[in-house]
Image (cartoon, rainbow, N blue to C red; front, top):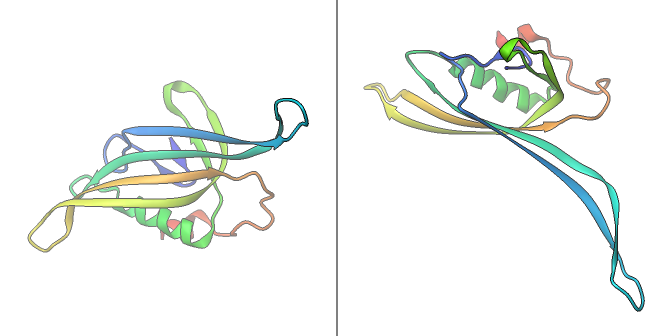
Amino acid sequence: MTLGPFQFQALGFGYDSRSKSQKTGWATIPVAGGMDRVQWVGGDSRTETIRGAVFQQFGGQTSIEGLKLAARLGTVLPFVDLSSGLFNVFGMHVVEEITEDQDVFDASGAPLKNAYSIKLRRYEGSLTGASPLSIVSLLG
């Protein structure tokens, strides 16, 4: 699975769970002498959350730092799954939130384990106003 230039792998930038959520909007319309009606007013959002952990000896923290930069700069990223010989494109997404839970520290205070959670929101707009960052600027 990849999110823009960031590829999830077994070692390094791995993940152990992925959850999805879709929220839709319904307006309540009062009706005299009867039960209120509801009318669909469209979808509100589609979000995905990816959870995993990176370990200092296997790397992966650079990818988390790159995603934090993409989030700060408002970069729109393609979300693609290449597993099992399939090519599933989940669309364009923005990073809404990244949380980290660092644990087990070495003698210099660097975390040996960093559990993370990345919350994505599907981007439905035009890419015209999207951040013009290149893959090189996110990784370099």
